[in-house]
Image (tube, rainbow, N blue to C red; front, side, top):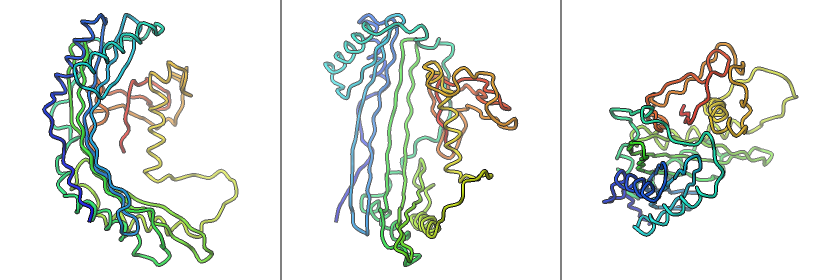
Length: 334
């Protein structure tokens, strides 16, 4: 039997102190401004196909990134070598790149007065994602696949059942006084069966459940049953003539359209004219009854959104049709 006992990695590294020190080194080396980010995480993943473990992965990672400014020039570098020599090379590399890049008149860090904070429990991290031992995690994947194949004899094969768990930490600091960090966790279970109709034509579909904590996941049996239902309904599908008709999208599809609006409205994409919304500020791009709000402090089942430097900022990106603001960063979680 395959045994896996991944647990959250215990580390003596203080990530906030690390990024603060890297920023200080960059400033001492001649940078006019600097920002650094450090990430640490571990993950477990198992995929079971036809009842047998097909892949099993346990991994851990650490990384450090630096952006150094020389006036309106900037250079970025990253490393996984957190030794003093590795950090020295990181600082030297970022500054060397900054010296040869073109000036960007819009480049720079926010003023200190624009920084924000989010207090209280952000519901991003729960340690129960590692409450199952390795054998139990594998069994969750087996149960999801078994439940997906059980309802109907037309389900003859499987792309597998899976279980995943991960935790991570992120710390950020810049030369204007900001230092912050947070932890995240994730757990997920999925199944993807294949079905065959009387004519030998095959269809596949799947379903999944993911959450920040284990207790919020759907059971493997519920995930498998929904995966089977979605796969069986595809059997006997037929083409329809090209026509203009009202379309109702499933929630997991509909939310991607909202995400596309935020991606297109990002300040970086608009500045690079890499967005269909470039030059459309104030123009009507949506229905009059549509409002999309950029609020990364909204508490959702998966926690808050992308915190960034200004987590207390809430803005309407699209209000009653016209595009009213570009956004610097956004994560849509529905």
